[in-house]
Amino acid sequence: MQMKPYRIGTRGSPLALAQAYETRDRLMAAHGLPEDAFEIVVLSSKGDRITDRALSEIGGKGLFTEEIEEQLSGGQLDLAVHSSKDMATALPEGLGLVAFLEREDPRDAFISPVAQRLMDLPQNAVVGSSSLRRQALIRRLRPDIEVIIFRGQVDTRLRKLEAGEVHATLLAYAGLKRLGKQDIITDLFDPESFPPAPGQGAICIEARLDDTRVAELLAPIDHAETHSALLCERAFLGSLDGSCRTPIAGHARVFGDRMSFYGMILTPDGTVWHEVRSEGPTSDAEAMGLAAGAEARAKAGPGFFDSWA
Image (cartoon, rainbow, N blue to C red; front, side, top):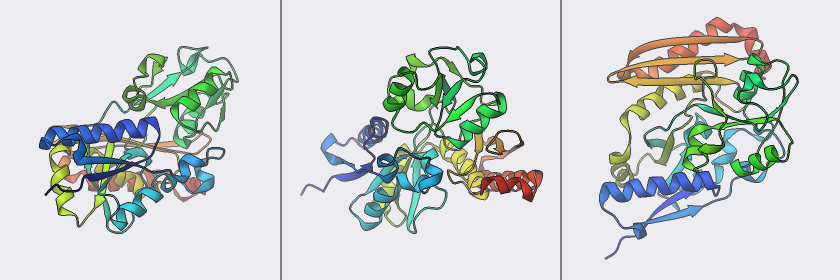
């Protein structure tokens, strides 16, 4: 008797589909399963449908996952594939991030037809970005630049750039690589001066926490180093609010059984920022992230967070 295929939920953007197919292919290889053992289920999200406003104005990261998580909770899906940086830190009851694929390069990419680097852009240039973190980091390095909201799928943003609506835009290097578009990159940012978003470059897989069958399915493709790094980064994010209304950067790196973490919080205008660094055993990943968040809060003081309201 043939078992029903595993139903994998995903958004319908080219990048989301690429990530879902990569997950399916890894599961096929790990278990020797045929392609028809899996069904890719494409769902539309509010975050994809509403593209004329900043995410911070319409509800934050959860808008990309709400419909998918409803079906996952209801049993219509067996697992869901997401970009880790798009995931809220508080998930619906009974759901969890069960596995992480090996992380791709987490750096941000600079794309411009008029300049090689951000610092080479003309005075008062216009840059498009939907990320509050990227906006704040741009303003930190180049206060003269005008940053405008730039939402939509990768191809939409690139068309706007080509049409001359902005002088430059920023996108995740990992996403461009997964789409085979890395040749359009003008420059890659140093993660020290322009730190990535927590979770950037990592594909995560969400499932019901009580579904042991799916947990066993996912175990062979869960990358231990990426999982540890993301535990740390998401703990840091969660301790500092972690919504799309806050400019937060964080990057954990794993070296054997040790981990280093670098985090930054900024005011949205990029004029004030605080950095934290820590190192410890990977077994303390989540505790390290929480401690780093507490340290960042202590450095910033209560007034700092008024600008995040």
